[in-house]
Image 1 (cartoon, rainbow, N blue to C red):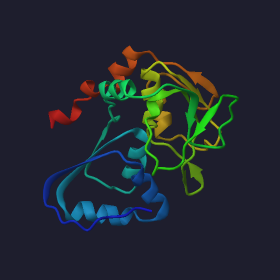
Image 2 (cartoon, rainbow, N blue to C red; image 1 turned 90 degrees about the horizontal axis):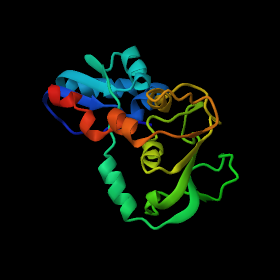
Image 3 (tube, rainbow, N blue to C red; image 1 turned 30 degrees about the vertical axis):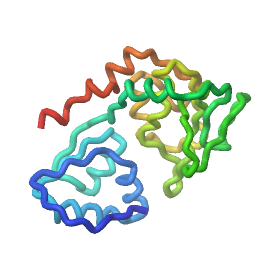
Length: 204
């Protein structure tokens, strides 16, 4: 469920970046609250988001303007965090539904702070449920592991709709309906999702 903090702002142009809460709010019926807040606190609103989020935002006329946009990843930061990590031969995962014969490190306690960049690889399937669907918007960790040259095992188990992750993987020609080992080189990752190559906001 979406929570809105009652903070009064006054913006000529309000810029919003994609967030799964837009989809969540359309499912739980609170999108009207988000829409009212945006309208009451800005003269004009612009949403930058991937096609999955844009679809639901446009259906409810959430903003005035929309731009297709994919959140950039600071790969230099990823490399630095990795340099501080301790090597671990397990594979990081967040869902017990994951099908794998790999030694897994199952992480579901957000209170426990760990450096996730030290694991040998990632085993991933969708685990966050909104309404009747398991959905993922970005799955940034998947691309971070790929950048570090780690093994990434992907399973479409739990997938019932095309979501944000579907759109991000499409950028690299990857079909997320197939169980597979995903491999993407650093260069296309940098060119497509690298932080310095996503300058659309600076043109406003």
